[in-house]
Image 1 (tube, rainbow, N blue to C red):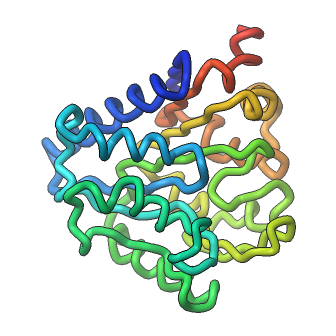
Image 2 (image 1 turned 180 degrees about the horizontal axis):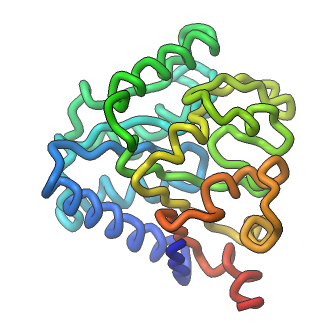
Length: 243
């Protein structure tokens, strides 16, 4: 595991943006395209804005980037809670990514149909490869969830499905999510975690015994050499204290 602890969110955004840009450039030296999974939620918005507002600084060849999503709330694209809509507003409408290289999770059909359709898309892309995405961007909720894998969810024990619909009872909402079977085959996984409300759960995820049903983020953090954590000091406060 590679760990980066930055003073605040602004510096975190710049550090992660540069890391992403450098990784894309290096990958494109030997591959025709770079496949990236975007994260939803509140935390990555400022990262996407950093990437879009400072394109000359990062010089990403967006026309060779293929965009996927880690999960999606089953709400209309016009709904502010829609992860794809947020990514378009903050990033995709502002960089020269090719529309044909953007693969949204559909929310205009039933959740099970959407999951099946996205599963087919991913199998088409990666069926002949031992690996999947070049990069998966993930966040972590203050309950330890990532993607749409929440504590106690039966989906956590599914080790074969690539894409699945899940129902979150607290939110009373269906969501579509990538599953460990496809994400774990990614070349790299990068977590962006910020805020003091994440400090306790982050310590538990990193220091507690492996129990992903309680701490789903452990699925992608524990026992992996290809995971990178970008944290601000507030989120890292309790693990820094322990050393």
